[in-house]
Length: 342
Image (cartoon, rainbow, N blue to C red; front, side):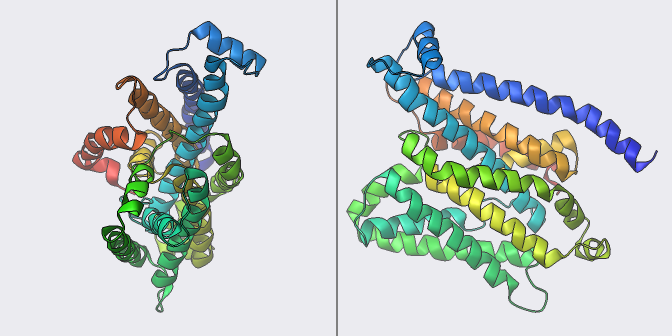
């Protein structure tokens, strides 16, 4: 069977799957807008969405100014985390690579702690920019350290560098928090990872970065397929490995940095979803990336909705729900070894 025939058959098999995921994402987004700790009737929700006017009532204000921005942030952040995880796993050829292991979460946390303790700032809207700078700075540091030496940034050196930077930054954060109770109290609400309290100002702040990163990420499918064959084979196919890795890390820095800045460290989405996409699509990153882009926000929004309805009138943070549900999912990935192959 020729390569073109094989690709055509895969497109026929996997293309409708993307359409199904789009429908599922729309349904989950609708649930996210209609369900919450405050009970709002479906006619009121539909009336608010239809008019796009708050009309001064509490229910329409909650729908349009709280739930809609929160849902849109969930979609963008989920897509960014899923795609960033897939790219990191492809670039490093490490099935465990995600924002946590590569130092992104630790870098964002350190900068938020410094913002609280050194600059005395408060509020999620301000933390966004410090966290964004910290996430990007940490990822650049990881890549710079891994690039030292004649071999350049090999997958093993990237993973080791990420672990080392994560450990170092975590130690700095712990050292500061142990001597500053106010910083500890302020940080613990951001560090858990949440969509609560993330509304229009944060959405408009990070959306351009996330959209730009998502569009750019879709162009890495062929390059990641080449890297999956090994560096020598990729070079033999005419690929500039060092340049490809640097470009991929730049895109990941924008995606994971903006996502972590907006919602804090959210675990398991960037780690588990690419494996699920790989299980569905096979090893072709031209399909893994769009599938991860759609699967991840579905998972994130479902976890957020679940956290809102199981603890009424309060709510569980999405980071807590994903931690509880993601652990057994990851055990399943480890148990069925075929899923962990990159």
